[in-house]
Amino acid sequence: MSTQTDAAPAQASAEGQPRVIDENTDLSTLTDQEIMKLMEGMDHQDDQMNKPLISTPVPLSVIRQEYEKGSTQILKKLDWLAENGWDQVWRARGDGDCYYRSFTLAYLVRILHSTDSQLEANLAYESIQRALPAMEQCGFDKELYEEFLDSLLVLIRSFAEGGESTSTEYGIVQSLQDAERSNCIVVALRLITSSYIRTHSDLFSPFLLSPTTFLPLSTDDFCRSEVEPCGKEADHAQIMALAEALNIGVRIAYLDRSDLGSEADSAINWVEFGKDTSEPGRPLTLLYRPGHYDVVTKDVLPQV
Amino acid sequence: MSDARLRRVQKEIKDCAKDKTSNISIDMIDESPFHLIGAFPGPPDTPYEGGYYEVDIVIPDAYPFQPVKMKFITKVYHPNVSSASGAICLDILKDAWSPVLTLKSTLISLQSLLCEPVPNDPQDAEVAKHYLADRNSFNATAKHWAQAYAQAPAHKKKNEPGKVATDAEMAGLSEENVVGFTDMGFSREQVISILKKLNYRGNNVNPQSYNAVLEELLK
Image 1: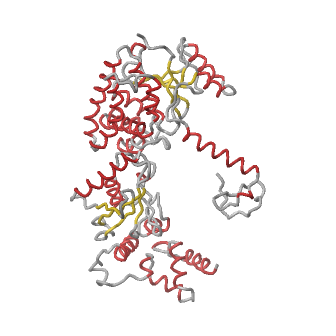
Image 2: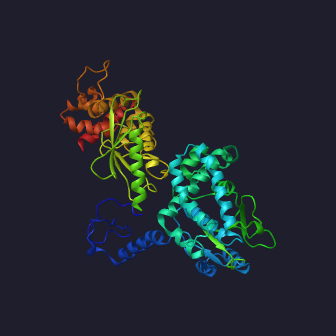
Image 3: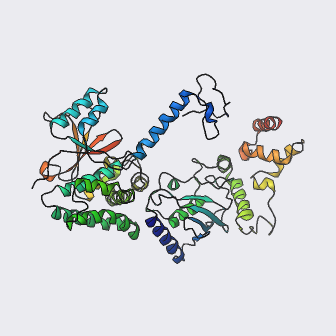
């Protein structure tokens, strides 16, 4: 960001000091360098907003390419994932809601790939219903949160009823690319998370810190500023609360520069949340890169 | 997209009209439900008591996923409200907005902002300085503004009914200090603007700041 505030003369500005370019700048006076800089900025901004909210899976090797010139530790972790069958990544848009969007996708794909989708859908439906009293207890407007929740319940119900629109991975991705539906689901999950933290305050309060100042926040302040608003990243407290509230296991592969996993059989740190994170419990599996979450899965055909 | 947004806004307007206890009103300006005027009475036991405050409301396309846009139409003397434009500094109108908040709950938050200013995160730096430097003088000025712009009745004890506050009082300055400089031949308008900018009030009135004022006036 340039800090120069004086109206700059039309010609190139003083050496080293980039001039401020705004809607009043005569475009014909732009230097090649300035044009390049502007284009870069544009690319970067549009970058996120042009990306789909959630995308069909790409091979893990695509992610690996991004790190080829980077840290060997990260490459080793990626190689370990690939060797162990974690070979596809479903990318979420990096808009601060990526955890909730990734969670939704993984949650629905889990239902799709279970041996009895109908049963699994009914279980999911019941889990969500069980989270409702806490929301009411926290004083959220029932009519408002029901409208948000409905977007998620409709999708789950379509599994229970054997509906066609969601019966494939592609169908799920397509449903979640609809901005209004996806945003409604994000809000619904945020409210479930918030009401779980609020109703289990004694459990969570020691861990509720401001992500910017690292100072402790009250439960109300934390939920109000870090959970309920859209675009606020989920951290351990939110991830834990959502997993507990919906009674589902979540495993997150940490693709960071930390030391390699200490267990002999794993080169990556899996951080686990919720009740059953064992393989038979079929936890949701996410990939974490600092500041961002995607879904990572094994490309296995659904068991018949 | 806009269907759900329209439904939600219409419902919010209707619910607010039904609620007789909150004293909050939301009205349409023309046929569009996306540009509204909200209004509420100034909270009791504040300098804004007795005033009636109108707020311009614009519902963005991505509502309720994006915060509603609000600014004061009625002029307000408050650290978190621009005294020139009515722009408001309040977290829920920015990054702490959540889709479960409503127009009514946001207007109530504005009402409580009037009760509890947050001078450390000001919208109007001059007003915030005044608030921090001399609370009594700040309260008096806020009250003058409420009477002049928000139809608050004049307080019986301090002002004769119908008496209009002077330009110095509206700026939260003492007449004595203003006259001290106008007597030297500077224009009243210029003196008031500079004394305001330098927060020439309360403990800030000392020989050092006196010289600073002269320096500014002679620029």
